[in-house]
Amino acid sequence: MSLSEKIYFFIFSLVGIPAIIYWGNIVWRHPDKFRKTLVFDGGRWFVFYLWAYRIFILLFGLALLFITVMMILDSIGIV
Image (cartoon, rainbow, N blue to C red; front, top):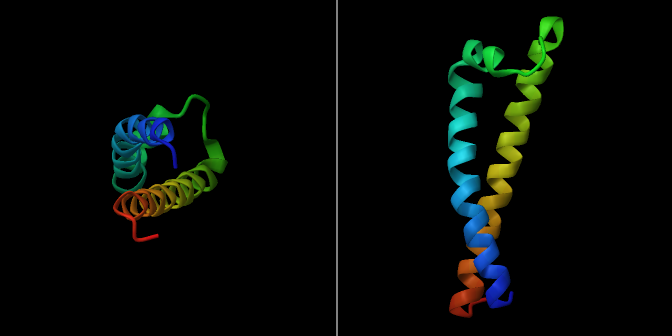
């Protein structure tokens, strides 16, 4: 990974990690607040949207964690 790619990843992480924490907290602990923040009316599909966001947050968080660990290992020369 080149230096510019590491810088881009670091900047993305500065925005991505707080966003995951914020939206993950809303989706998991405050579904009513999540319903209010939806741009469109959830209606009977609200449960689907709720679980889709939960799965997306989990996958995105795990991918970001994996990439961070790989970048650290690459930086210290283990990989």
